[in-house]
Length: 123
Image 1 (cartoon, one colour):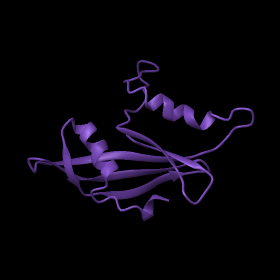
Image 2 (cartoon, helix red, strand yellow; image 1 turned 60 degrees about the vertical axis):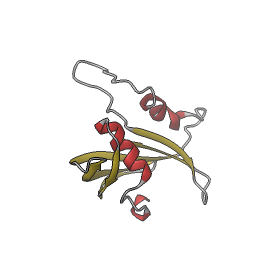
Image 3 (cartoon, rainbow, N blue to C red; image 1 turned 45 degrees about the vertical axis):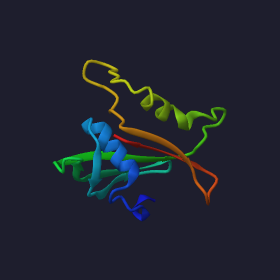
Image 4 (cartoon, rainbow, N blue to C red; image 1 turned 180 degrees about the vertical axis):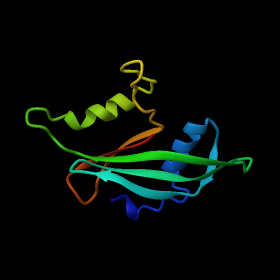
């Protein structure tokens, strides 16, 4: 669970915010609010204030989704489809009113103490 992660000036958060604001972000405060969870993912709203290298403050609000590794019978890569879609790094519109949320950082990390692989996206 992400509650054990120190998000104050977390390098992944700073990288995502730098991408979001299209400028170097050197520090950021953060507050995590659990939004929803299930068997394959935990979703959090991350809010705070980001500072660029000129010490200009910007309020931000992004979503953190941590998806656990899972397999559908006869479909071993089903857990990766959403990650692969986000890493296309395009502003994809499914219809005129429905589009894929922009992802500022997507990571795949192997968990040390469990068999699963976690994927995360800050968008």
